[in-house]
Each structure stands twice: as structure tokens, then as C-alpha cells.
Length: 560
Image 1 (cartoon, rainbow, N blue to C red):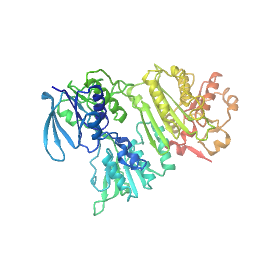
Image 2: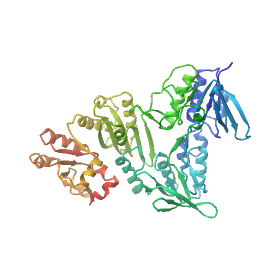
Image 3: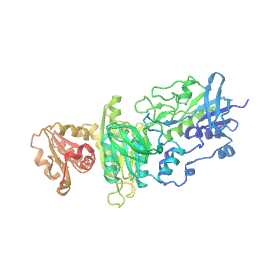
Image 4: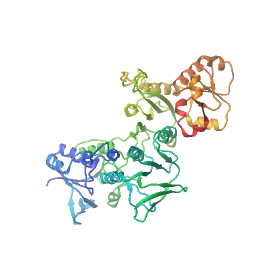
């Protein structure tokens, strides 16, 4: 009897598994059921289709059902929903959504790749015209059509999709407001990093951002068209287009009903071979949880890149091979107008909550040699575990090449490299691509000294508390006088690096906080003073250029 692989779901994991299984086994019967009208598409590309960067939605399609059949002998059943799995007899119940017909199909192996769905909160007026979610190509087509007549848009949620949509809407000429329940945008970043992007969006891109508030109702006219959005704190925002982008939920219901074990993250639990608690049933993609390689704990991080890897591993094991998926680091990147925001591993909040004792370094630097006309600023924040010296996370933002630095650290974390080992990494250099010492190596040098306790720094959060509590200290700004006059921290003194030693080495100050433009010069000057016996010197992470874009520091900075 011919073996039969049934796949439920046809986006990333499902179609990847179908193709890989076919390459590995030409005799296997493969049937893929999906309740959508599209398969094998890039959901991550939909904001760029809405923005008209991609002119035709068909460009988002990787392969058609016809191509799967003719080239790979995979039967794709569009608009067919699997409504039940009965593991005791290896069958699924399927409903044809066009004809309402129901039938059973028998499998040898089953792959659940049901993905995730947009979370839509129970808000009054959610069904008004021009109130959308964004999860599929069909959603993006509706939103793009609405852009033709819309003038004012509200985005509910300030995650990756929400911020990518903000760019699409502003580039289309819409007045755009983002409403976010959390106290910051982009929760994968630390507040000091996400604050930089918030300032950029508000001051350079004219995007209004409302934090610590949530939508309680959508209001419409007599024709059922959206006119206003009402928030919990009483704000009323005029809008004729709204998109709910508050996150996604894993589609686990059919697996749960079949008795398949659900993990503590709320997604399907699988082993490293992508097997569920029922051996002949595998699961992959956004519907499954995996292991965070830093913490060793279960995590649910739905990403298209991860789904493709899941699908490949599941297919290899289904056809009799052996492959493992060893977990994720949470690597991600998003484009926000000219800005890039990229992360890997843990941020400070997650590290603290996990109980990891860590050290951090923040450096702002040009992504290329400074004399190159297209050199742009990036800010790197890297974390390492104090006990082992191993990297546990990186955040990178800016208008320059931030993401490639994150990819390098992701590789170092996969190899369990320490900061000291990383300093010997032979990174490429040419002026159009990098400074002679890459910003990553600069940040790692600072981090190594801090791990060795040769030098200490104060983070933006610590400095904020320090200044709020008016602790005794001397805040020293070593930038040029003309730079100091443009903006500086309240009560800071402008002293040149040459004068630092004579001013502070022989005097017993409670604490000396040194600040420069980007963090590196103050680090070097602090190191010099430490080496000469000045014990109470600390440098300010990131420098004044970093602090001036963090919202809570706006009132603490004097502008010339």
C-alpha cells in the first residue's frame, strides 16, 4: 500500500515540507489541504504590497498549486478545511468550503502546519467597514484598495507589522496614528532602544503614537463606515481606515481536540524532530513552540524563517531520515522607513526575568568609514552573561547596516562564543562596508572591559534614576564646546579630555559620570582615569546622541 503524507496548511512550513518530502521520496503520495485560496506565499511581504513597492500580489506567491502538481506531484486542495483528526484510525475529516461536501482521507503520516491567526480583541464596532486585520494576501488586497479613498488611518499595535504599516500609510499620504497598550513600541527591544525609534517616527515622519492606552470602540456613520476610534483613556481619533495589529495566536484547536499535547507557551509541543505527542503526527511552523537556545525554556516565536526550517526538518524525518531542529535565538529584523531595527537573543528585561546575571555595552557608531558619503549611524546594544562571558543578546537600530551586525552575533551565539573569543573574529573591512574596526568589535571591546570589571558604566535607565534621585555626582561632557551648546544634560560641565586629569584625579568626588557624543570617547577617557587611580569614574552608555532621543530624557536636556 502506498504511504500517504497529509499536510494541513499551505503557507511556509506546509509547502516547504511538501517540496522536501517529494525530493527525498518520489513514491510518497502527498496531499496538502488549506482553507485559503492562496498557498506558498510570503505573508511578510504584504506591507510592501500595500505600500505599492510590490505592484502585483502574485509576486508574493512562491509557487502555484498547478506547479506543485506538475513539477512535484503534490495534490494541493485549496478551500478545503480539515475539521477533525482521528489518530486512532489515521484519518482526517475534510470539508470542501465551496461545495460544503465532507469526506474522510487516510494518512500514513500527518503534518499539522496550521500556522497562526491575527488576534482580534472583542472591541465594539470591530465589524465596521474599513476595519481590518493583516494576516493574509486577501487581507492586504482589501487594505490596499481602501488606501485609494482613505485620509486618516489608525493602527492598533506597535509591533513589527504595525510599524511597517505606518510606513505604508504615511508614504500613501495618510495621517497616521498608532495606539499601543504597552508603555513602549517594539516590545522585543529595551525601552531605551525603542524610544529612539519612537522619537524618529514622531519628529521625522509625523506619525502620532499613543502609548499606555487601548481601543475600546470603533465608531461609524449611518452607512457602517468607520469614522472614529475611541480609546480607554478618552482619546477620540478621527479615522476612515483602521488595522488591528496586536499580535497573532497559534492555530492549535484541531490538534488539541485530537488529544495532541499543547506546550506551556500555548502552542503545540514537539520534540527536536518535530514529532508531536502522537508519533505519526508531526507539526511545524507558527502553530508549534520551540526551545529558546539561550534560556533552554519553551518559547513561541512565530517567524517565516523558522517555519521553513521546521518544514524541512519534519519532512526529512517523515520520509525516514534523521534531522533535528535545535531551537531559536529569536533573531528578527524590520524596516521602519529609513530605520532598521534588529534583535537576537535576550533583552535586559528577559535576562532579568530569567535570572541571568549579565553585563551590557551600548555603542553608537557609523556603519561605514566616516568619510564615506553614505555612512550612517547605528546603535548596538549587546549583552553577555557575567559568569561565562558568552553573548546572550544583541539589539541594533539605525539608518545604517544594523541587521548584518545582528547576524554576526547570532552566529557567535550559535557557536557559544565568548566576548573574548569574538574579539579575534576576522571580520571584513573596506570603507564602503565598514570602519577599519567594525562597530561590533568596538562594542565587544567595551563589553570585555566591563566583564573584567576594568571599567564601569551607567545605563540610560540607571542614569535616569540617578538624576531623579539627585544623587551626588559630577556629570562631565567631554564634547567640543559648540556641540555642548547645542544640547547637554542639565547641570553637566563641559570639560575637554585634556583637562579631565587635572580636574578630577586629585579630587575626591562622590561619582564622576563622563559623557561624549557616542559613548566610545567617554569609555576611553574613563579607562585612562581608572588606570591612573581615579576610582569613582563611570561613563554613560551610548553617549548624549543616544540619550537625547530617549523620551524620558527630553526634559533633562538643555538645548542651545
